[in-house]
Amino acid sequence: MKGEKVDLIVHNAVIHTLVDGEKVYEAMAIKDGKIVEVGPERQILNKYQADEIIDAGGRDVYPGFTDAHGHLFSYAQQKLSVNLFGTTSIDEVLKACADYERKTKRDFIVGRGWDQSL
Image (cartoon, rainbow, N blue to C red; front, side, top):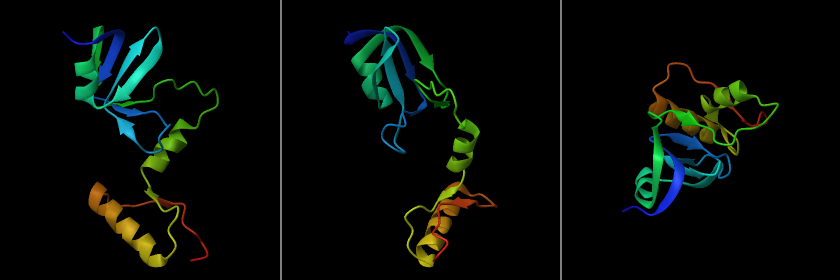
């Protein structure tokens, strides 16, 4: 039998806690309206049992999102652009753009965060 009883498990998700920067998780366990743990899907499914289990179908999940004045659309646009913060040369900018294009296969690339003094 699995371990700790929780109220809800959400799995097969892309969970953005926004706590660890860009890190995402696959599953979370919830008890009494509070997130008990986020982590890899197998870890959460093996560690907890719940009467309600939601398969998120690979969708993005933002748990605990309570910001009364959020710019979620702007955040989504940022995620669809090349992050150039911290680049210190034109070569680094070009490499970041090439890596992004190779990974995403986009025909049109938007970047953000470059140093305009380069």
